[in-house]
Length: 443
Image 1 (cartoon, helix red, strand yellow):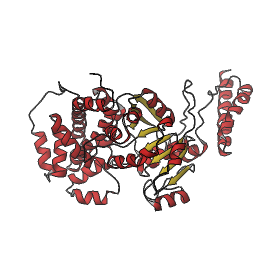
Image 2 (tube, one colour):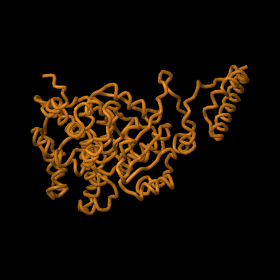
Image 3 (cartoon, helix red, strand yellow):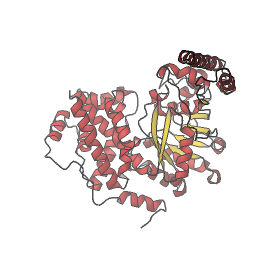
């Protein structure tokens, strides 16, 4: 009896797999829902899973080989499908391209703007990015635009504006965008850049207030976390933090992006998320330097942990919630960036540790390493707050004062012992000032 039941289970599962594969190859995976009742009636004792999550057909066929063999993802029964949106992505670099691809595979209509005419032409002709992720076949629902700035008519039609440009380009982009926005029907503004504006030491939320006003800044949303572009396009499971001063808008952004392979966790501390995303790049340079000097696992673990302590101390002094630094945007992104040789900021540090000059590294890197510019802004913030941050200061001295990496490493190791966990007593002045700008002052 047990043998017969086992065989029936086996036959049912095999038939289910055959049906799923056939239907997927036919290009209409949604028809599998009609097949399940027939299989259940034919094999009443066989276990058949509940209605499966239907990965968009093209995504499934493109990426299934990169996921673990035999691994199948199902939706949460409580999650309702997200309405399909029209999304305009500003930026066709590594991260902008990979997020455009993710949203296209999630059945959203996606436009991707680039300043470079050759990128636009090549992308629309070949569905490949000639600069970044060059071997990846991008979703055919993505249309590249540019180099002219998107016109007001298109911007009025889109539901989401996604900003995936370097932080130093955000102010000029928003200044051009502002006259084209309809405040009566405002799209969802989502920012994924990680950095501090060099000229002003401002976070992106402050730039939004300056260029677009407090009402738009209050509902701006930020996405950050451990998320390498090359893994996102291969549909490797990824999780991120989604934060906004508006819980409603954070939830909207989460619904648009969330998939079983791209999980979103919402929060209400965009300033902490921004700081964590910017600061971790500086500490990634430090861990890269240590590796380049020949130090190994103990040293890397120490730098990551002490880097987290510095980030949290700086964040609380600034006015962020210290718990944010234990989130995906905090320790999650810090760990990934500090432990992977494919991290751009880690690579900058590693090559510095090997004796290369910063000028040569930047010239040959091929992409932006925001930790280099962030180190300068972070130095100014730390000085203004009066917070001890020896690792961050050491990186700044190597990058901008020409200090020798070995001397700075020796200097750090010769520091006297201190309390391991020590948060500032007086905190929050920068955030209090920003809240006043936003009209959210509670004092």
